[in-house]
Length: 427
Figure 1 (tube, one colour):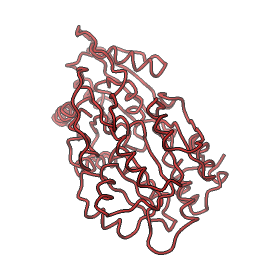
Figure 2 (spheres, one colour):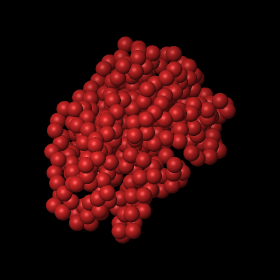
Figure 3 (tube, one colour):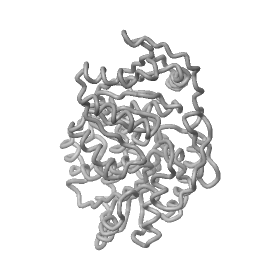
Figure 4 (spheres, helix red, strand yellow):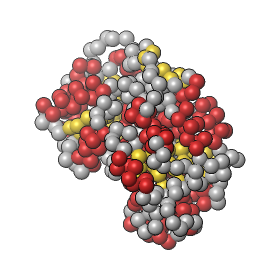
């Protein structure tokens, strides 16, 4: 099947060709015809499968065919959990609508709202937003959602993980009941199914890949190394392999900063990206990484679903996540859109149960190797993996866990800045 077979307009097909796309991915092939027919969609799509184009292309086709005269009301709303994902989706919307008379905008916290308000007042057809800033500006009267006809909830499972349930319900109360709903999630937990029941009307279920599976284009490796030797191993891998673009995941913000400093001391250009960084610093670090101005980007799980780096060759789990599902999202930053990629995990004795939990979720074995000269000697007992990221409370508040497995208090989301970065948390 080709994109021409899907029934999209010529202006959209032209933009798709300019992006170099020729054949739709499975999620695009399955979802686009139903969306064009006005159906609600409940889609299971792993990262890197082309899901953004899967909902954006038919959405733009519909909006362009029903353009209204006069001031542009918001007719399509795309809700995302993180700033990075919002920025990425917005960029895709702009690229796919380059030949259409469609105006789009993105709003999120962490930056001043003045410029966003100015853009909204000029009229916007498609709005990409994080929940906190969206509700903040709606409360200020800077935007209206009364004309929304297409509502997209992207990364719904991540939304619930971050405690956005109350905000999602509030947003839904502000948009018309008669609308098309498109809900995308990497996993279909009981909470996700319950949320879908309140949002979707007679939805068509679409699945591109089974839950919690890594794309076949990713080569997965695990090295058993001592905890104190990980930095040295990472440095050697990058230098000896002459790797020019490497995304490294740590469990904590402090760990990301510490590793970045050590890489810089070893003459490897690097930057960290996590929740304590300003939005400007996060945007700059990501831009430098994409432009190959720095070799390494060190990130916490805040980046696991919000980063789209074309042809990223290497992902390293400096520390394994204690929530096994997060492993899938981390390594999904490579091997995107059919490209090949390599995911390497450094596993110390404390993380052996984390690896077992990941293998159970993946339903496959990840062979563990030992690097000559770095034979492990640590005898620290394994820490237990978490079976779920957070326990949801009423109204979407939740508790998270520290890396030691103990519960950590979470503050309620009282303003836009807190909603988009819901708490001072280990992210």
